[in-house]
Image (cartoon, rainbow, N blue to C red; front, side):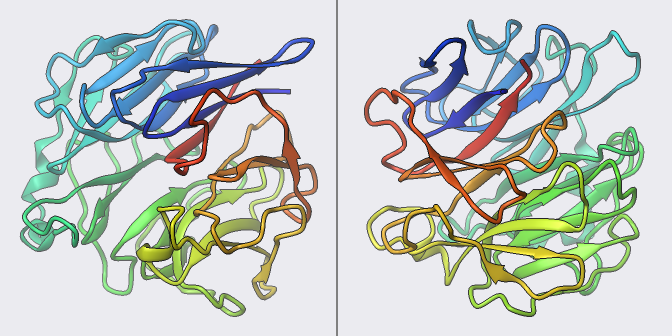
Length: 337
């Protein structure tokens, strides 16, 4: 059983199980929004906040400290850890901000370099976040699990862009690709494949983002937010979906669904064991390489676990501190044992 890091705007909640489940609260009042795990031992954990930059834990989330000399913006909107160059070293850390910028650290977060070429892309003048059109931000960073230094960066809204050399040079969005990616995934068993859950639908690429297709047959809701792929099977994909942003994030008026597909089969709703869609915010998902077929989902109604790759779900009864998950979940990640 892994530990679970649940990001809410109120706090970062870390659930662990020894004889019973316990939940610790961290970074309260700083508006956490994203989390990433470096699989070193003990795990090094990064959490981005809207009010106080990036925080780091060197002991699997038990104690926290601010980091980020060299990150010029206090609002951290995305973070991810790429492959370590050496087996006993730290992974490369990427942090995204509002306004849109990406910073890279090669020493576990002690210092950062601005990957300024991102902002020189031709599409940059068109990036805009609809609720605050004067700005935009990095919504997601996906460091490819198969290829070191290949990183996909989603701008909200306007582009899914790429770097193949760790941020020294950048490739702009391509025709037919996603415009408003919320979450992107890569898979160790499918090199070159990337999955995008976007506000403009579901996209897949099998050539590292050079071209895209939209296998949406069966999806009745096309505003997608969360995505997970079975750690044991790159053909089994789970997404969370609604009709639009108004029914996605706020418990008031929320109506969110979970869909599942395998291979070329149609998407089907996969709600067995999950709460009804009405009044349920979009689910965020997490998986762990050591748990094949296991997917975790979290929303304002709780934390859920599927042991059969998303066909069926079971609520996990955890002692959440108030307000718990009641206002929705921003991000989810598995902590190594």
